[in-house]
Length: 437
Image (cartoon, rainbow, N blue to C red; front, side, top):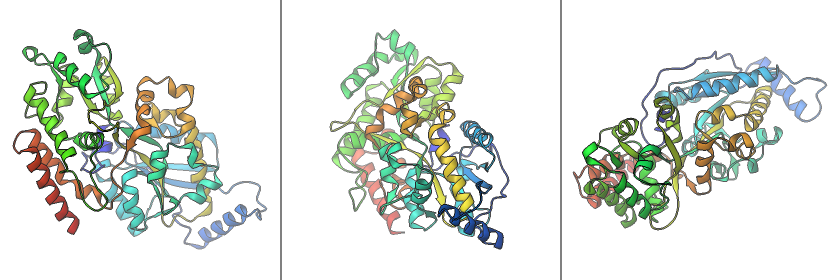
């Protein structure tokens, strides 16, 4: 499921379309019948309606879950639809590599626009700025959905000018996977938690004669999660409030540290895209930093692996880069019955999302996090341990475009093609050019 998250500041690998549903939703109530429904819903909210039952409505729901995760969201939708007969959620799973292009077209044209959509948390400020989302405060209030029922980090990020624009489904931070068999063979009884332990462990885990490495440094993805984590841990930042800042001494030191692992021989050089994952699957890479979405692949491969929070490699603090899937309400969805149905569905999900946790995700709903059923999930509960110090991409418009030059320059530094400082200086120069466009 890794592909679902490369939308965070980088391009995605598109997978096949898992599901397509009909588009029969009334998107906005712009005809006479729609206006009638909207008025009826308004009267009901005010307590003036004489109708005893809620008005039925279809809800068109878009997601980018075109990987294996799509089946888990399907289960949630199917169970909700079976739980009542007033609202019907029609799930459409778009190819994740094309998701935001398709969403842009639908939101701009207003035709076949979704009533409800999944959006990555770092995309929300840009879509709010474009005027394509509406606040969810009223919807949440009517459905008894409270901010305090969710982890603070995504709620704070998507609260813009005092208005709440997204209701979080999950948080997916970078995590550490480790091969338990290799750890046992090296006499290591617990995963590392800091730089000293990590460096000592990867030395013990490396056996060049057998082609086994302690930690294979990726040169491309998922550096989009790894590099920010290391920079923040070392007291640096990606954005200083007015400008990009990834050529700071704190950031450059972390680039040098990554290259240093290659120089020490605990990682091979010239690692190709996904090479670190291939070696992990082969039992030749003892530690991998990646996201919760890798669980299904590792389970299928039958690897005896463990999951733990990323160690604090930097010198300043514990921190980890994360993404988050959120429910958003497109601008123009005004049909009162549809809006009420969306609230009902989201309230249901807030306490009935264990199927999503089964995909490997750590849920953002506190009632779910605190449930015994969730706590029994070893991996997901370990992932949730880092929620207190997760950080998202800087809240800067078009951040993905701005930071994009970093990944090529970081790769140059890790491969030894450029000095770390030169690579980061070049990345900053290219990012500043992108900001002028």
